[in-house]
Structures are given as C-alpha cells and as structure tokens.
Amino acid sequence: MSSNGIESTIVCLFRRAEGIESDVMAQGYDVRFLRGAGTVSRIREMRRIVTTEQPDLIHTTLFRSSIVGRVAAGRSTAVLTSLVSTPYVPARLKDPDINRFSLTAVRLIDGWTARNLTTHFHAISRVVKTEAINRLGLAPDRITVIERGRDRERLGSPGIERRAHVRRSLGIREDEEVLVHVGRQEFPKGHRYLLQAVELLAERRPRLIALLVGRDGAATPDLRYLRDRPRTRRRVRFLGHRNDVPDLLAAADLFVFPSLFEGLGGSLIEASALGLPIVASDLPAIREVVEVGRNALLVPPANPVALASAIGGILDRPTELRAFGERSREIFETRFTAELCSQRMIELYRGLAGSAEQADSIARS
Image (tube, rainbow, N blue to C red; front, side, top):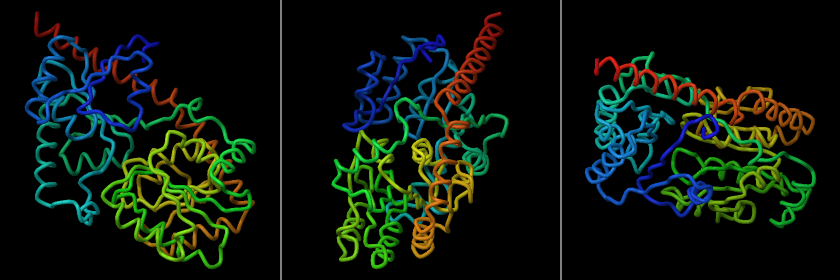
C-alpha cells in the first residue's frame, strides 16, 4: 500500500505477545496501542487520533475494534469495516462458552452501528456477505467481496529438502504420515473431531502423526484430555503458537480442517500455497476456497468417523494425494496471492476515499 501512495496508521486495542505486531513495528510503520481498558475510553482516544491525523478512511476489523472506530469517526470520516467471519450463525450457539443473550445484544449493537455509522463493508467471502445481509440487515450494494491473500515470498515453496529439514528438526521420520492443522484452540475450529479421528485411525495406521498448531484457548483443557488418551498420546502433538507455520506445512502430507463454521479459512490458503492436499468440513465458506475432488475432500462437520475415513482414504491413494497437492498450489497462484488481493483492496480504498472527498466538497459548497 505504501508503494501505491497509501499511508497507514495502525491502531490496536491492546498488545499481544504473539502475532505480527513486532514485525510490522520493526519495519517502521506507525503502530499505536490504545491505553484505555473500557470501550468509552478507547473511543475517546481513537477520536483524538482521528482529529489529529484527519484520515481519508478508517478501516476496522472485528467487533470491538469496529465499535470503537465507527463511533469515534461519527459521520465526519468514511468508515470501511471488514467482515471476516460468520459470528451469528446458529452453530455458534453450541459453543458452551457463548451466552445466547449476550450474543443477541452484540448482534444488535453491531447491526445498528453497521447500518448507521459505516460507509461500506469488505467481506472476505460470499458466505460472509450473505450472512451480514441476513443477520445484520445490511444492503447488498454496501458490501464488496474481496478474498484474503497471502505473500508467496513469506510462505516460500514446498520442496524435498525443506520437508526433510523440518521433519528432522521435529524428530519425524520420512516414512511417517503427517497431518497438520493450524488454528487457535477454540470451539469453532473443531479440533476434538480431528483428535477423535486420529484415535479411530491409530490401530491400522501406526505411522500417523497429527501436528496441531495454534495458541491455547477455551477448548484446550478438553483437547488435552483427548490428546492424552492411550491411542493418541504418542500421535498428537500440540505445538502452540509458532512463527514457522509455513515450514510446518511444508513438512506435512495432508492438511486437515474440521471447523464447525468459517468466514473463509485463511489457513486453507496457506496450506494450498505449500502444495498440500486438504480434508475439511463441508461448509459453504470452505467450498469457496477449495475445489472438491480436485484438491480437497469435504466431510460433514462434527463427524469424526467420516473425517477418519477421508483421511485414511486419501493417504491410501498416493497418486491422487500428489495430484491434489499440485492443484492446491495452482489454486493459490491464480486466486490467493497477496498481490492480487491487495490491489483490489487498494482500488476499494481509493473509491471510498474519493467518494468521501466529493461529499465533503459538496457539503462545503
């Protein structure tokens, strides 16, 4: 964006020990952290930043940040909100950590501020756009779908030497069958069904290993119990948050993604970039990313038996496994590179900023 004349100030609600904040700051970008603990104090801080910086556009992502950004902007600055998930689908109510009444209140606040304090929306998939129309009451013409992309240089390429090097560093033999999943340990990601599938496969696939990559979450205690069962304790590894996810993908044979609901599935894109075949839940959003029968097998969500059958079946067909991986790489190169997706976002930014400037000019005249 900088090379296209777009300068950014990045505002975060809080610091994280994990993630890319330090990388972004090390490159010299203007990153600021709000000091307030509550929503009202954060809105005041954000309003001061808006008054000082006079941005052409405020771009918000996720509920709390969007409330702060929308209210702080008022009606004086164009606001773009990225819609990155489907938080109000009925499947979310199955999460034991979700309170139905709290979720309803959040949806009402989100919907009102979206309809009244937001200029335009960016959805990362058609499914996310449809859900926003149905659950938040947004007009279809206020939502532009632009898929998320990944930087091919940061991810690198799959290869025999890279695969062997990473496997050696993890103590994994070349003849072992490696599954990998990337995602925080939360209910929507469906980790438990992967662990149950591994348990079902354990007896007839003695060389099977599952690597679970992602920080701990609300589901972690339950997952540790499943991991430590007799058939899974030596087959499942929790690797936690990692900065070398592309290397771990390059070392795997198969990417498994048993989510219960998704907005897009960003780690599917990364898996495709590293040439991995995919077994995943049959969700509308996932169908937007993969090609069923060409680079992916899809199974009903929350069904460990079907998941185990798909994993075992594709591992038993090495020619098809290799063809799936090659097609994954082709899909990434044609649809999901950072260059393609960033250029579309830049065009959206310019269109919204231009519309705001026109409106401001008309108001002054």
